Image (cartoon, rainbow, N blue to C red; front, side):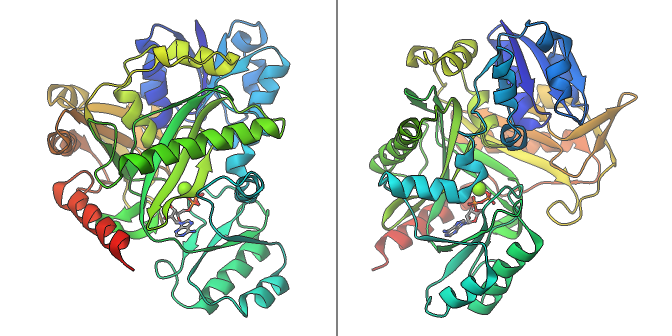
Amino acid sequence: MNILLIGGGGREHAIASAVKRSGGNLYSYMENRNPGIIRLSDDFLISSNLNDVLKWKYVADGKIDFAIVGPEAPLEQGIVNSLENIGILSASPSKEAAQIETSKKFMRNLMEKYSIPGNVESHYFSDEEEIIRFMKDFDRPFAVKPVGLTGGKGVRVQGDHFQSKEEGIRYAIEVIRSGIGEGKGVLIEERMLGEEYTLQAFTDGNNLIPMPLVQDFKRALEDDKGPNTGGMGSYSMADHRLPFIDEQSFEKSVEILRMIVHSLKREGITYKGTIYGQFMLTKYGPKVIEINARFGDPEAINVLTIFEGDFLKIIEGMATGNLSVKYSRFSNDSTVVKYLVPEGYGTNPAHGMEIVVDESGIERSGAIIYFGSVNERNGKYYTTHSRTIAIVGRHMDLYTAEEIAENATKFVTGRLYHRRDIGKRETIEKKVRRMEEILKDP
Ligand SMILES: Nc1ncnc2c1ncn2[C@@H]1O[C@H](COP(=O)(O)OP(=O)(O)O)[C@@H](O)[C@H]1O
Ligand SMILES: [Mg+2]
């Protein structure tokens, strides 16, 4: 089976590896020369123009069986629609289906219209006068959320990124004036309190198969300080749950994703591919923070590292509407992902810096490496503006998995930084205690 993969980061390296493990041929399109993906590919195309994919010989000559898209931007550009027009089906959503991610307003409206549980009070604005008028009588903590894509860097939450109501209003106005989030306007949402978790699922628009839960760490610095990033690392547990999520909340979260996919169907939109729910467990139960139309990065790395089913059958099932649970299996191992990122990542990353990777050292130490936004030139590796290398530890015991990952970070040298606290006992126990306090708070 010939698979076309779009994207050149750590998530896509993990997808590439799953395709190869299940015996597929891999044809990869990326903007940077990702050495991990290139090594696994039967052929690859480097270009910063997505339209070049459609002209690539394997695509144009009909050699590709199915496509899978890693990042959100090509989904929004409608690459799945363009491929379908020339007869290639994808295990990723169309432009219309991807609106569940590319418009936070579309997502909230859909949840409202179909009374899907887990929705959050949310108000849409495209005019600054309206914001000022509305906020006069609004006296609860809130979050300011650009409607469109911002690469995980646009949302600001009261008490966290800003303190006073006035500061929040000022930012909401800035979002409109500067067109932050693709100029699609801004949402003001009630602020939720709780612990966040990720639930990803495979779907063909009808059937839905949940993957193991993952917790991701968005803040740049240890102890959840510093600016938001695309994600500094993540962990998953051997039982595919998280220590602070009860079974009922897990089941509810799966049901919410299922209802979203089925509601889209009723709107005439078939959602195919991985759907990603970013949830927060609050004292009112699971709440939807946002929905993504693809695997998470790093969360893809956690789940695909332990995927032991038939990935090609899963891709085919999603793309053709015949998804079957019998091809999905995840091993009972815990995983810890630590992203090594350029120093200053989140504000002013040290890009274009050479890094040295001792891959055999990593392998001997029992860890796994996935290349992120690395550029290869003349056999040397350089950082870009984004996350550089993901190191994964995998073990039945979570804390052993953490040690494996942490220990292997020393085999990569250069102007890089990573969070030591991800997957550590203290970090997780703190989250469990915080959840207990939120749940018992009257
Ligand atoms: N209504 C909300 N209440 C509290 N925190 C929120 C709320 N909405 C978003 N956040 C916080 O902001 C982060 C980013 O918001 P999200 O909707 O996921 O946007 P994006 O990932 O596109 O930046 C979330 O991970 C969460 O921590
Ligand atoms: Mg998010």
